[in-house]
Amino acid sequence: MQSVIDKINAKYKKPHVVDVRSGDTVRVHQKIKEGNKERIQVFEGMVIRTTRPNSHTSSITVRKVASGVGVEKTYQVHNPLVVKIEVTKRTKVRRNYLSYMRDRSGKSARLASVDFDKAGVNAIPEIEVKEEPKEEVVEEAPKTEVKTEAPEETTEKAPESEATPPVAEESTEAPTK
Image 1: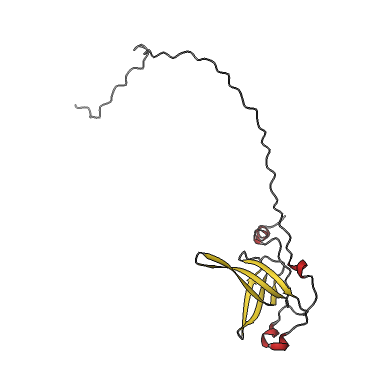
Image 2: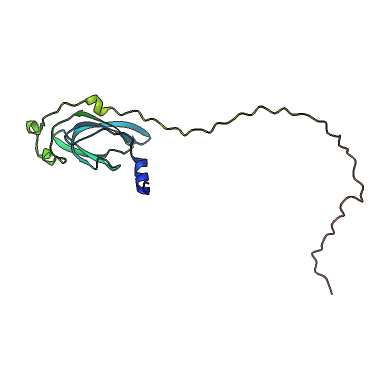
C-alpha cells in the first residue's frame, strides 16, 4: 500500500526521463513565457552535479562558459517547463559534484570522453495511455408506440354544487369592542 505522499509524488513525476550523469554534456530545452508568447530556449553545457536521481525532485546543474563568463543553471528534471534533455557527449568522471571544473579553462577543462549509445540514451519510449474500459451500452430496439384514441374532452362546465365553495376573505381589521 502506497502512502499518500508517494501517490502525490508519482502524480507529478514524468514517466520517462533521460539518464543524465555528472560529466555529460547536455542540451536542455526549456519553455520560456514572455508576455503571451511561449518559446523554447536551449541551454547547452556540462552537467557538474546531479541530485536525488530517483526522486520527483531530482535536479541537474549545467555549466557553460558564455563570453568568458561561467554560467550555471539548475533544472528540475521533472519540471513541466523542461521539455527535453538530450545527452550529446558522455565523459568519464569519478565524482558526482564536479566543482573543480569551475577553476579550469581551456585544455585543462577537457575530460576523456566515453563511447555510448547516443540514440539509446536519448530515446524516450512512447507513453501508452491506459484508457479505462468503457461500459458497453446496449442499444435497445426503438419502441413502437401504439396509439389509442382517447375520449374526446368536453368543454362543459361542472355544475356549481360540485365546485369548491369560495373561501371567505379574512379581514385585517381588529375587532372593535
